[in-house]
Length: 336
Image (tube, rainbow, N blue to C red; front, side, top):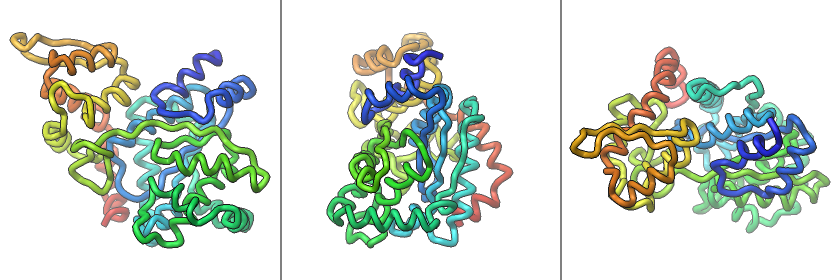
């Protein structure tokens, strides 16, 4: 695979890269560079996570060694979203779930490594650097960095520690790239600015868009109506998508269209619409822009689109559901 092909895999379906020029140079200099994404094991994984998990597959296809950080300490630092006694079981759940999703998406995971945050974030060198970086960073800048990903209403001191640790993770995981959602941008920019103050190099930051929720706005693990849990039943998926906000002819805040644009088409490159002849008959879209154009011009009805998305999503989730049928005890322990 040449550099252009590798670059296309990394840059597709992204919202911002800091910087593209550095990424090109990295691909020119290294055959097998490294990247990571960090997940704090808080709420159950939902359909919005399919976008970044699919992007992990892109990194692997482009020849990257990829580390998936299960940031268990971060999950507690963010206003104790995960109680301390549940961290171990939720860590196992996240690892098992991500593996199941990648298997369902037919991703070769031979270059993937899972890392638990507490395995290195409690080491003396890491803690020393947390203290060193805390003397460089003002509380205002730390709170600003965390504002998109942490609870910042009357924040605890742990909220200020959260972005400091995320910045240092780049160094201690020894990676070339940190990958995350666009909501991570303030932390990633802070890391680029402040790691050199400790004598460490800045990293390339790759960010993907966030999937709008079913009710419009950000899909959130804390809002049941806005999300589809990856273990929801076939009927639950169908009912949630049926009720989703998908106003005829409108793209704004349309989570169904966004799911097609940022996940289904990058994954399958097509979508089959099944409908009666009197409504136009079956259609296969092999380009997202054509589907969007027909939807906006009202040639494609929201209910027909929703049915197609339900079918595709259930096909992906079915093997995941089957795998977790054998892991009910894990779910009970992680989310009692």
